[in-house]
Length: 519
Image (cartoon, rainbow, N blue to C red; front, top):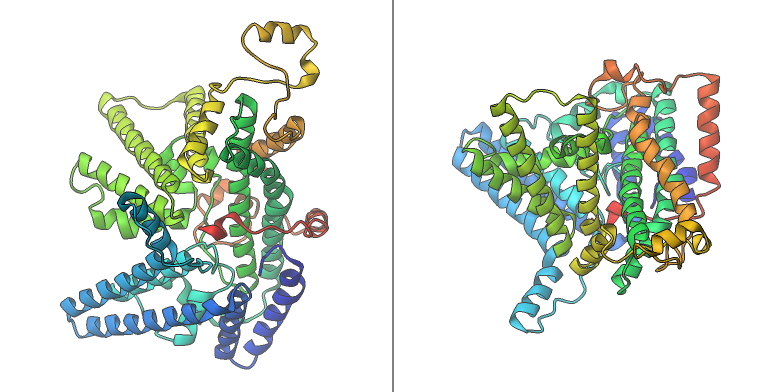
């Protein structure tokens, strides 16, 4: 079931919301059970066959969590560590089978010239997210932070429908106090109003911005994958369209999840904080998919040794973390290359910071910040080309086009102008700026420019909603309230949201899945 569907908005959500607060009047346990059951229905709507897999994973991890907590109470550190190791291995093996088995078999067949076959394995939706969510529970149990071993609440913790398919990731210790709080089970009209507002803004990102951008990104990448050679403008339009599509699609989903959850008076962690405004790759990863970044830092980078064993070991740990983070996103070498690129970016960024510190270089100034931001954004765009491309050759050919190695072509309408005679002497051609796809370049620019303006010049949704406690960990709240576009509970504010909501609803027939569903 998609958030951007009529059945979700006009049937599922009202029924679940009304049922939750109606049952809350009788029992908090009934209400929590209702929400857990509704979340399983939400998941089963995709593929009923995998509900059994999800429930089996929940029962297995809950049992291991109890065993680990019991061993901790008995001060049996050896058994506690063994149980944690076994539980994590089981989770990772399950994830590896569904997500990577065919990838590894295909690569083994290529190397060994064999024909091994496991059959076609369908990737269960959300397996990466519900697996990582449960690993955080196991680690919390190991650290003695699990205080409330209620199976219904644990099931709700794993299956909670706003985050189940594509995050944001959260920790057991973040959610359990909220599931236990009596205030969660009372109607808070302000939370419902603010949550609905955030949901509509996130839905608008997806329907009105991300999907139209996809109408340019997808055909261009497909044409290059089919053997086409994009020239300068088409290559850049494809790369920028996907860069913005991914941001508006995924951050839109996260905003919808945060808004939906707030209607139930449950706050999720913030997952995006205007990442394309970053002036370094280090800052980018503190702003992009923030919950995944923290997970990789806490559960991979730190256990590898972090920066505690010297500079070069730190660089190695960064590279390993990002390579595995890339592979987590998808079973393909392009994801590994994307992760490796960001590992290299982070190594260079940390080395540069160390050099600046040793040399005593302080501050960059306005133009220095502009240059750092432009360089960071360019590095991110190059990475997204590998992330989106079906194979390595497609990514390389698109990058060749972006630096002009495939040539430059302009609109046919400019072919008879003085500009054309000058540019032909430089090797330019005039058979259409989008010669591979025959798309309208000016229409693409009319979408790209507003998209870039929103990304770089406007506050994000959490800054717009800075007057309200909508997420668990919004940074710099005092400064966010100084922005000029802070939403107010007023007739004008309600009217604007109503107009945006109307535009979204009349465009919902152009339904498309979220990009992160495939990861």
